[in-house]
Amino acid sequence: GPAPDLSGPSVDGAVLSLARPPERPVLVDFWATWCQVCRAEQGTIDALADEHDVITVASQSGGPAQVAAYLAREGVAFPTIVDPAGALAHRWGVRAFPTTFVIGPDGTIRNVEVGYTTSLGLRARLWLARVL
Image 1 (cartoon, rainbow, N blue to C red):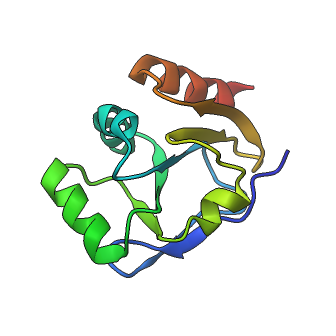
Image 2: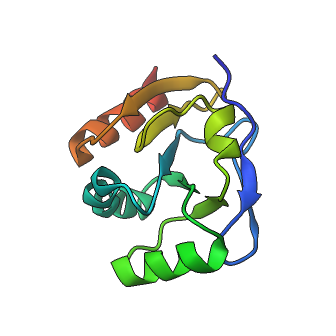
């Protein structure tokens, strides 16, 4: 179905939002700083953000300063919305971290993955969202 609204403060204070509808497929990744599986996947998400539209949501991980410090310490720079209380995660039906959504150009959720996903798997899902 259609992707829920996604908008919130980023680590630098700007507001990040999912376009309605997006021009291209968008990867939306919900993660947490305390999640070890998220940590294992963050290099993949960071590399994808260099080539594709990516929005990540740091849930239940503190405020902007804490999340920014974590990103700097880990050496990743993907666009991140700060969701300290998990309200966005709840709105999107996220029950575990990481949970990754692929949103198609028509604004619908094309794929949902819970847990670790490889770079090849995520790239394939983004490609499929573009051509189907």
